[in-house]
Length: 415
Image (cartoon, rainbow, N blue to C red; front, side, top):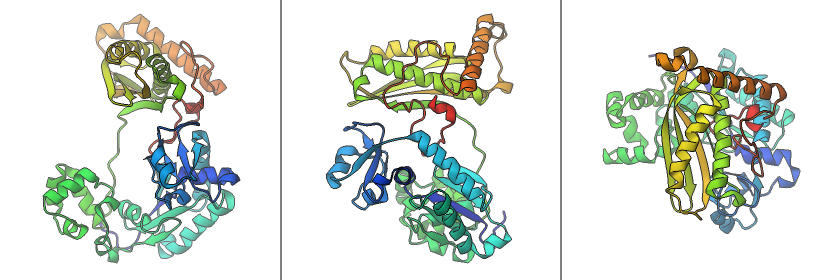
């Protein structure tokens, strides 16, 4: 395995992305502590993202609204606008791409680039050009922190060290010593459970971790991820394994006036149609549907096996079956706060193998053609023009297009 002798990677992480985009787009919010929430009028949910002004008071992402208001009474609650974040993301990619080719977009607020010989020689100038480009052509209220290192993993860790709006450069000669003072939670791949496992093995700091052998780390992690992390932390050019699609799903916090089982079902139904649409567009079929509901006191869920399907009729029939069972578990006046649906056990279309009799199912093939025809019409007019059954999105919209750190919404998520 190759060990680079110079920096080869850049990792860029936007600072408080959702809140900073809101402040850039809305001058009245600039310089003020703001917290992004699911929709207007919430009191019992959490702050999805906080601005740097709010963070100075101790407000954190995914903090209960009541707790956030207690430590920051002037906190302004701003309903999410996911399509704005999607458009800002695409604009930022275009501007950064004019300075350096983007290698991988990791999430809506993170990306990584490979460096050429000239860029490796002067990373400070490259960082300055990127930041200047964003400030000039997008806006000065959206900033980013950039890390440079021999590999992507180290560059990501480096980028966390000087936030917000910082630049950190770790040359290979500085590794692994530069990692010794860091806490475990600064290292991608070490969560709270893994930290507990490390401590149970007598490893209490990064210096102790870095003294282990690759095989020892593999043993502690109980899989090859530990060994891969060892090589990454020691500066080797290790590439992340290609990930395969595992599911398509959507979830949503319910508005205050839609927290009954009946209203939750109507939301779940529309979320499932959107998930199935995304799945078909990606060329997949599902063999399992999972549904969950979350109340104030407990969560319930159920699932149903599917015969490798993609059409709306099949998944909605399965949803009705699951929902009838869930209704038996919920008291009549129970309040449902969140609902979610997931299509899993995926199969690519060219790998689909069906029972001979099922493959001859005329009705199934007709439903698949009908779903694809509906998708075509909706795509042509860029809205949910044709749907199977009622289509009455809740107040505030964001049905399937909600704020997300891990998935970048598509335009059709907002139809």
